[in-house]
Amino acid sequence: MMDQRFKTTNTILYCKQWEQAVAFYKERLGLQVNFSNDWFVEFRLTGGSRISIADETRASVKSCGGKGFTLALEVKDIDSVWADMEKSGIGPADIKNHPWGAFYDPEGHRIEIWQDQRPLS
Image 1: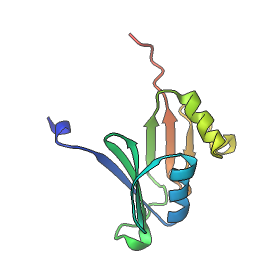
Image 2: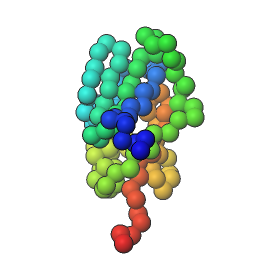
Image 3: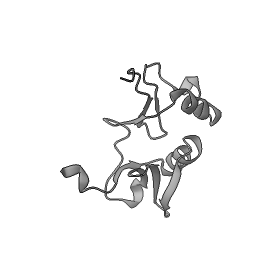
């Protein structure tokens, strides 16, 4: 099976506002740094999932300015995640009114936080 060949997945966001984006993911979302150098920071999302922030001035790939990109993160307890985000400074003004709770990072990348609401069978 194809999924057994891959150990981890990593989404890399190339950013014009690199320092602000790194601070956002580290301080406001509270993600754990897995690797870091002077132009690239990899954050751990889950055991096999990462998101990285790269400085576009140091990379061959340039920023998309958030266009055509959504990072969708499923969580176990959305209420506690939203409470943590509000404590970190992501308040109601930053959250767009959608059932799945969308907001944007400093680069304009859309982030959705959601919880599966289907009844357990």
